[in-house]
Image (cartoon, rainbow, N blue to C red):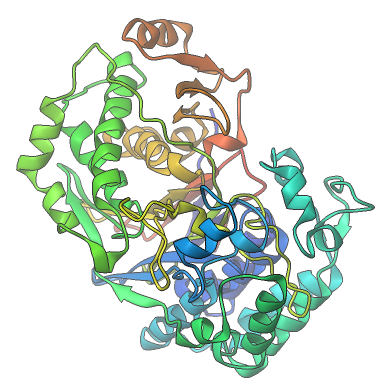
Length: 531
């Protein structure tokens, strides 16, 4: 059984060791948890490019020691030229996953860093931006080792990805994927980060960097223009919360699917499951996820277009009704959605108890694949979530935000413990979070065991005809037989640890002694470090 690392006062968790080391360095230099996370976000944007980058989006949850929760939406809207007519005239029936037409939304991550640093300063942070970005600049300039997880990634639509403007020059070696451990430098990206360190993060949108980004996006044919960049600001939003018997759990409102993550926990609690790792435990979570996704798909859209208050679905009465519709030993039909998506989740809790849960993504591996030559940025493809059907829940419109799979979690227990947790995993993120959270919070597993334990995910693989319940191969065979008997289409992966099942992490600070337990996924290239 794995042991949970315990740190005296503060800790970080990240899916790449260099990002974790950066966070530890900032904490040791006197930085607070938000400052450490900005530094980690910049570092991992360089060294884990298949999962995230400056050309992507992010969402923040921050809890002050006295209890106030801050939620930051750093997702970007569709560009001014991103119209259904434009894509229909080009012959598209759906948003393409790769290339310039996939690079159709503003990248909000750097705007989120800027807004987070305003919060950090208000909470006493004093570290200069050039220090926070110094590791990221060094990794980009001097080089970093290509991560093992990058080489394992299946790279959906690989031919189109390799053909995207600038991709081959930035990420391939003689036209092929580089070997894990080989050195990669990103000199243009180092220059961009250096300019931001000097001029400030707003330069990404409204300064020299923004001008270069806009020129390159126009050159390759993206529907995002300079006015779109200049107008962008990350936003402070009201977090969603659900009350459980032992804790209050927080997540992000739309366009994030945080609602689904909270619904799963609220519905599952009302099934009154008493033992972990039983057919009842996993069947209950699976069925709760189906109910949650049905609500999510009706509700979650651009926050300006919401027909109902998402909090209305998290009331005790509504959760009771949803739980009552679940049959104890019979699987409901599976939703057809795909489960793909590549992301990084990272957590930090500092010596004062300031806690951060942060997620940053370019959506699919390497996003659109488009690498902008002047800045070295690769741009996300989050706009794939839009529909070209004007009557759909999430139709493509200029200025509209797409549906987001990103869903960082933060829980405050009645005994004073504070838990920061999250995962990558695209559409599957709420499913993974339900598994790791219930294992720890409901059934008393250690953080390390909760994150290490085998996982399942339901959904369609890209191009597959139907959804299945995919399971890592460390589950008890009796559990698999029972779930099959309930009507779940079980598909064994043959892998004990699979990247597609998430890179999850959890940190918890204990009120009595101030110690922080922290783990990150054995499925990733990272871990936890602290003071």
